[in-house]
Image 1 (tube, rainbow, N blue to C red):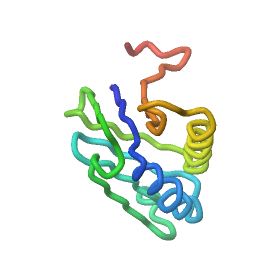
Image 2 (cartoon, helix red, strand yellow; image 1 turned 90 degrees about the horizontal axis):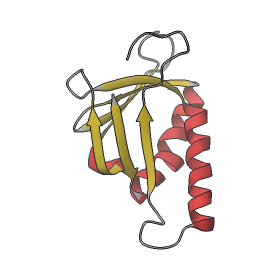
Image 3 (cartoon, rainbow, N blue to C red; image 1 turned 120 degrees about the vertical axis):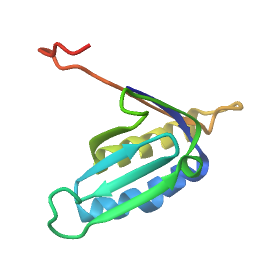
Image 4 (cartoon, rainbow, N blue to C red; image 1 turned 45 degrees about the horizontal axis):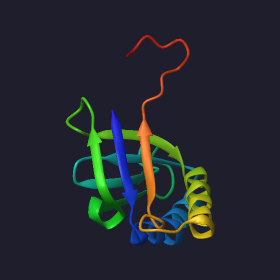
Length: 123
């Protein structure tokens, strides 16, 4: 499983200022589903308690240079902590603003790699 993309300026603003703060108020955990064309934020769908939310974006709405591959028809799903993603995004934006210059100064890269646990035998 591999995922790599660059967040567009519009994507950063959409996530940092609108979507993530709203999802964070509803709960801590969110499921992210990525495929070749779309990105889905699925909130509170699996346990069924409280408010449920689905946010669907085309890859162009959030990303530039979007690359995904997996054994499951290029689909990747995982759980993430919304507050941690929001904090990492804010921190990255702050660093890019403070130290960035040149043609790629405003590009934030997101990269997902499969990490194996210490006792895992899967390769």
